[in-house]
Length: 395
Length: 220
Image 1 (cartoon, rainbow over the protein chains, first blue to last red):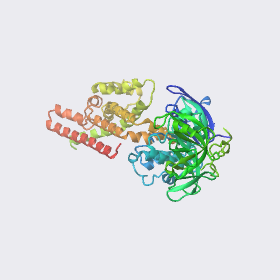
Image 2 (tube, each protein chain N blue to C red; image 1 turned 180 degrees about the horizontal axis):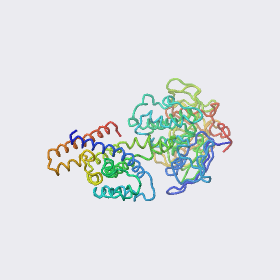
Image 3 (tube, chains in turn cyan, red; image 1 turned 60 degrees about the vertical axis):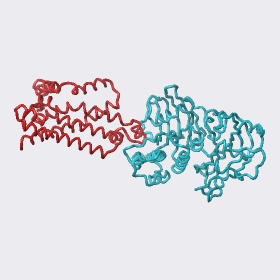
Image 4 (tube, each protein chain N blue to C red; image 1 turned 90 degrees about the vertical axis):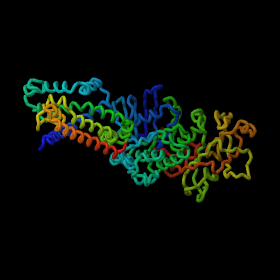
């Protein structure tokens, strides 16, 4: 049975050698790692834009590279939808001209046809089709680059830090566009990012690259809430990602369920009942209470149990902080709260202690999530055995 | 037809033919020098630049010897008469060799300014090398290539030294504006020479003006 992505690659870089090998059937893979870990080089090797790499690359059963057998497909015969950090739009063409740049290959590619009108709609580029690309904002440029890749009939999308140049507000909107595009067009994707939240929102499987090697791989929610890649993920401010389903919507807020009976009130504009969403909450914005709090303006109080405590190397206040890892409800999710060491001592937050997590509605950022599995069932994080069914065998 | 008009028409023929020949050749060589690394690259580069630094009469003389009856390209060697010496073809060939280095250099700079990552992007979108060249590289280099065409045209218009050796200065056959000005001057026909100079100025000005207009219409 052919796998979606099989890689066994060796490539000499300036400071170290990139040597990675993995096989995956996940429709979305997140390539995570610090700057200079070799992620972009790996993406370029996949796209066929490098020379000197050795090994094999097979995508959806087609061999793109097999140096032992002397096979090296040129980039135009590989079928990648490459979206680099800097969009790299063709300056001499309009938005439409860019979107249609790969149309010839798309017309020959088998399988579902992605139509331009739909891409323009999902990526909110309506009315800009005939504009020169010089007039686009940074976010629009990235969306045109994504649209161009989608419309080229790719077997896999390669998204190399697609949000790198964007500020926080723009990142949020672009992540939303990327998630919708993943759901709507169902093109397998490999997303490169140094941001754990992005990987958790955009990928079903995370592969951690450090100094040219695969340092860890697994389900993003497990990987980033666990200690194994600690230092890599914790340089950034940690954000929790909770998968939920909208149960009531309409108006400024919506109710979403993260497991039966466990509800969150979140900002609700544009949400519809039944819709799967991802809720992102910064670790620093979570309040931990040892007794059931009442008389709060905050709407969300979730029962949880302390799993462990870890020292935090950096907090926004500069104090030595503590990450309190908890499991919510009956195991719906791991949620990490960042507290000061002092608060942690005062409350006696030891493993096994039942607590309540308090979150303001407006501390919750909501992303319309990809459909998690064919039946739309949300794979409860923390329970890998019930993860969304894979298309092939175990990897 | 007055001699001035005849000279003008001959000059225009030579310049247009020269541009038509030199632009594709210079574009190809300019692209090779900008994008490809090959053995003997700097030797080729230097050879192609020689007409820029040698006296035009020296180039003309080398061509004359090569095309003479016994020369490597002469009738006795080839078995056929190329019929180049002292014809308009000779004037075009001389002008082409003299303007080629300028066109190559300008085209090369034009291609070097095209971001190779955009070409790589086109390849990932399924465009082969030729389509990438035609659809991305050429359009992005078009300003520089227009400038190259202008330089080729005006260099051909002004070509004198190599032309007079290879094609002579035969009124009505090979005597272009540049050659006719010199002939009138030598014969003391100052008024005629001045008229020819004025015509030359107008042609050169029109060529530059139209390229400027094209560049303005095609923003980078």
